[in-house]
Image (tube, rainbow, N blue to C red; front, side, top):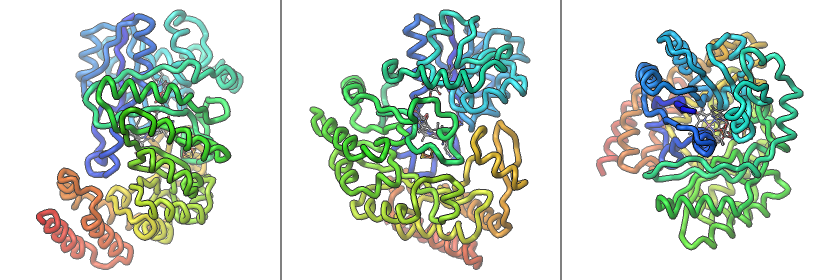
Amino acid sequence: MIVYLINMPFFEEEYTTFSEKWEYIEDEYLGVGIVQKILEKAECEVIVNRANSIKEMVFTTHDVMPDVVMISVMQTSARLTYRFVNELRDSGWNGKIFIGGWFAKMAWREIFIHEWAVDYVCYCDAEMVLDKWICHPDKFIVGIATKNNYNLHDKISINEIRQNNDWPARYVESSRTAGRNTYCIETSRGCPHSFCTFCSQSCGNIINNKWTPLPLEIVKGQITELHNKYGATRFSTTDDDLLGPLENIEERARKIHDLIINLPFKITFSSSISVKAATNGIVLDLLQDAGLEQLCVGFESADEKQLRRYGKQQSLEDNYLAAREVRNRNIPILPGLITFDPFATKDTVEKNLKFLFDELGHYDLGKLTKKLHILTGTPMVKMIKDAGLLRGDYLYYDYEFKNEEVLRLYKAFTSYTEKVKDIQKRANYKKMQHNKKIGIHHRNVAEAILIDSKWEDIADGEINHMIEEMRE
Ligand code: B12
Ligand code: SF4
């Protein structure tokens, strides 16, 4: 079987070029690499997409004449995928099209209801079903819906997948390419908290018990292989939560620590843990001692009501305590913090930015305009719809702000970001992305915007200072 395998999106997102996040976490998609490995093991010929426009992809499809075009789709690339599928069909290509990935997991019913011209949609992890499909593409397979049978997939099929899930027994290592600064690794799947109202994990999670660890021997194997093959010494774990359920976080942290410090080479890594785990000093010490170079923590808000609306499991006090513990250890932090959501008020925006600046000493420009993404299939959709604020459609929902003052703030922050982002990019290029002297100017402008003073003049002044500091 010849497969043309496409990972959408293939376009560069603007924020990737000015947000400090991207210094460490590179765009490396393990999921689509796993699909590639499964196909190759089954002796399919896989042509991995290198094109970066719809036109070129349509052309490549006609050129390679695959048996099937397989596309991995996230919410942010859903509309683009829809366009690609239509243009591919309009071009006269009538081979099979197969969609998977998080958008497929969350929106497979919508895909068929809206009559996408696709043949298969996989709503679970490929390890569970792809082998079966390769051998019997015409059979009813729980986990893969088709135009003709999607109505027959229901809660019972989803439960069946949950029960039959035997990851990590079916663990497949992702296909890799040479030359990265950082390599992603998996040490677990799923999220042990899984209640957040904006997250796919809270409802699209098919995995048993919501969080499944990978045996550490396999983790060690991944690290060693990537080191031996590519000289990798920097890693980024793709886990939603590196440590899993709270009862075992110290034990898991200790095991990960021991694994890493006993490697015959030194590595550093970036990982996500929960806020509650980040309040635990023992855990932080273990991770830092093992080489933790960046910690991602989903604080999400410094406002009690907003935290509850997001369904977060931690309290406001946990947020403050975790921030203190992390800061006391000088661990570089990548905080999850949602500045704008449909129900934000001037007060919540102010509190969140104050938390970011004062408690975390963090001044990343991207945070000023950080807006909640509304993911199809999550409880947030209904909440916003009920309030009459939902716009867009299942391909990409947007929303209006309930509060007018928030709209003013959002526009002002966006306008400042546009004004300053080339300078921030230059700073990043000079490796000054974490430089607080640069960041403090963003804070000064943000504070001016919050009090509605003549922020444009202040911004000009701050930008000049930034330029001077970069010359020093
Ligand atoms: C690490 C990560 C990132 C990293 C790297 C991305 C990556 N590696 O995929 C970075 C930081 C770049 C990132 C960015 C973003 N991310 Co992200 N990210 C994740 C995270 C935590 C892990 C991804 C991962 O490696 N999973 C493990 C692999 C093995 O699973 P997988 O990718 O889903 O692939 C499996 C299946 O989906 C399926 N499959 C996938 N493709 C295909 C194709 C076919 C044909 C088939 C049959 C099967 C199949 O089989 C695969 C193997 O099991 C996930 C949550 C999660 N646990 O999945 C969120 C997640 C994927 N991200 C999400 C989001 C929203 C984003 C951002 C938009 C965030 C933002 N606000 O900016 C950006 C978008 C970036 C972009 N360019 O589009 C959402 C996607 C939601 C959705 N419904 O689509 C998730 C699910 C988290 C959430 N909050 O719900 N992300
Ligand atoms: S936002 Fe994080 S903690 Fe919440 S359900 Fe998603 S992965 Fe889990």
